[in-house]
Image 1 (spheres, one colour):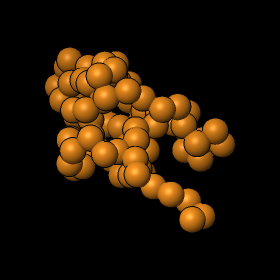
Image 2 (tube, one colour; image 1 turned 180 degrees about the horizontal axis):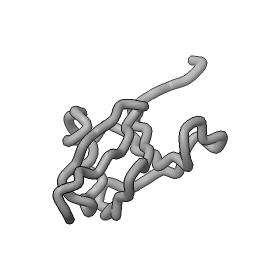
Image 3 (cartoon, helix red, strand yellow; image 1 turned 120 degrees about the vertical axis):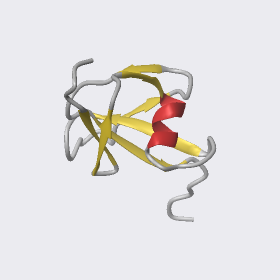
Image 4 (cartoon, one colour; image 1 turned 90 degrees about the horizontal axis):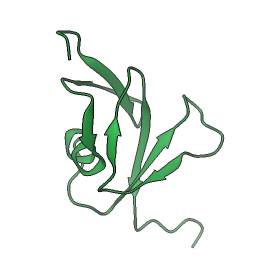
Length: 80
């Protein structure tokens, strides 16, 4: 990759990366989350009406400028 940094967004927070390929588990760590108790979702732009596409921790991402992700607790229980 050139000297230009790659900018992606995780939970609406901008991250500057120096490489475009990494496993989902690495993305979780780079974004400041610990462990594997998280669900990672790839968003199709800001305000994705689908809520995002779930990703496996072992999946390798080929990141592009402006990619967006959501990381949420995997043990969540809504409305209980």
